[in-house]
Length: 562
Image (spheres, rainbow, N blue to C red):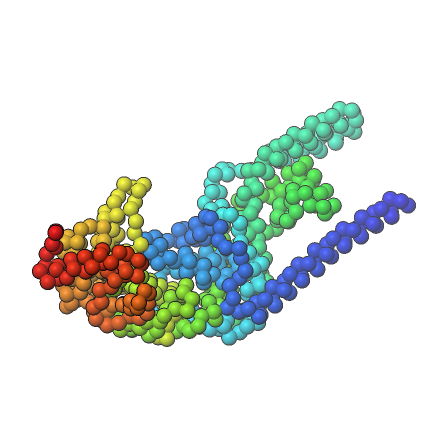
């Protein structure tokens, strides 16, 4: 009688634990849905990006980089595009954020995908309930942890050929031990203990080998499970994508069958769940999870193309929804227009990373040369135009009242530094960076849109101006549209035929300096660099001598060494 009572109590405890887990999960999901409903356009809460996380997020792009045009590493780093990505990352799954990163690095070169993309973005901005349903399922797919799933897929070959004969042999030995017990209990028990001990020892050795890959298998399963749930939603804007996902999921049917034995969330985790504790011992003795892992591994190797396609399609779908959330977060935005003409027309452009930005407009049919003092806004303006050009051709969204331009191959040479590891000086790094833009111009494709900040700053004044003039002249051809910033007023005269001149200026007022960050037509006319020494408290004699020296040079064309 006591055993029956104990069994019922144990069953009740297990049932309560399971019910509590189910209730907590349901409550968590309800809170998440409520957050999505009330916080559209708010970034998902997170503690920040850990060291190495962006490398993981970039893995899908690295695998699918291909041979077409993409934003290269120099341009990406020049424009702080990691931070722009983070500002736009409204995704909840690894597939979504890796595809968003990929999209930002592969600007469209024609209008082929733009119309379809815009239709889908608008659909989910307008259909709130359906959007939240999809976002909930993407959150269910979740992240992969420290590494990208593509890291695991790349390393599958390191596991070599695996088969289950050794595990089946161990299980057969247990059966034989039980058979021996029928004839000799003493020898049968001894043999059983030896066999079970051997199985447990080899279990932990194999378990350590496969554990890193279990994370990726679990992610594939979550992807399959949530895709199955998505299939029950109205087709809406994702009818074509859902058909692709169904086919891929069907190809992986054998991968999912019986997967619980290895994918239990409490597997070998010290869980207090009595059923899981018992199952852990069963795994150790009979190697059930190792046997299933090898079968799942064979299915993954056979269906890598289907897995990749599922990740691609699901990632694209979540990226579409994330773009809508990003738009909802913006003060103003516009849909870009691609007119095929050389040049650019944009009204009230601003940078997505700036709080309370000063907006500027630009209208040009040829290159733009920008002058002005340090900190006046030249570099920020170059980045603003460049980032908006990238977003126009990737997420079909611009931070502006209007944006009209051609499709471009976008490149920059801005935030360069000495290459200590390669032994290159700043000047060598700079001319290599500029040469890659000149090389890109010679390739077939859309015009190049390039951004150059302070051309050849790593060399002396005379050679800098002479070489800069010729390089910028080369960057004024019909196959390129160049935005360049410089301190050298001489270039504005030498290149007047090829570039439109714009400038930024500041006001020195009493003992303060005011930057307006407004783009103005024409070359810079103010000379405030020496005046700024006074603002910073330099001795008056230094300032007076500097002004006199500058005046003599402007009058006589040579420096007085006295």
